[in-house]
Length: 337
Image (cartoon, rainbow, N blue to C red):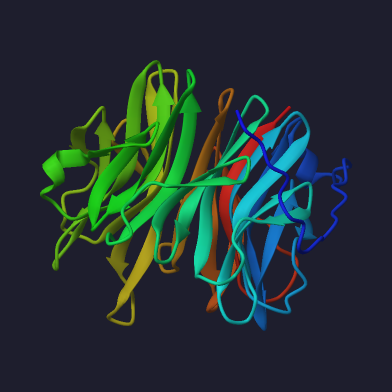
């Protein structure tokens, strides 16, 4: 496979510490290292990584930046997201804190997901006006036609096959090795957020929607399972499969005390829902789920007094990650020994 060396336009070096805090961190994280990608807000959004609960900033806050996805392989920490040059978003990947720009800033572009297989790094996202894109070791491939409104949101590699999930003209779509397949016949509007391949089965998570409702949905090899009934607005962000159990996380809207709506973080296991946040009066969202042994790790945020706190749940127990004031959101989680 052809490789290229990516231009290092901006370098932000991060030294990930191996030590853990005392007491509650040891109890919460145990012998595992839990990596989380997300952002904190201080005038501008700052791309961030937490190793356990130790914060490392990937950008300095001069311009907006976001960390959307994280993958750890052989000690290397890969993060996908974007940085702003003040005029447009630049698709970016950080490897051990060093940023590599995948686009030149001429067009608006973002990356949404990263996956490592062997020595190859797979990243997906989009670039205007080209639509959904896949980068393999920095080499770009257009997955959609320029005339289409298309996004690539998640990538997974299994048995040498590259699976990408996203949407084309608001139709749920999977690309297998670049070949496009529309889900549910291409007749229902949908957004697809996450893909996972297990034992040869392809699981895709997202929503079906119309003007009145959003239904949390899982497709298994194209067969639809609805997780919600459409009574309340729902959203799905991530899927993981382990030991014949399908784990999906996202949120569903509930009325609040002010007559409006609040989002409530949820986990579905084989279609059975669990509410994650303890205080139903506050807002929350679950953005990513990772299974490690018997432990279920979920990250997202909880709102308290109008401030969003980056949050991690381990087997349903919540812990705030941030120690600084201001909004913070956790977007992706990865666990290693």
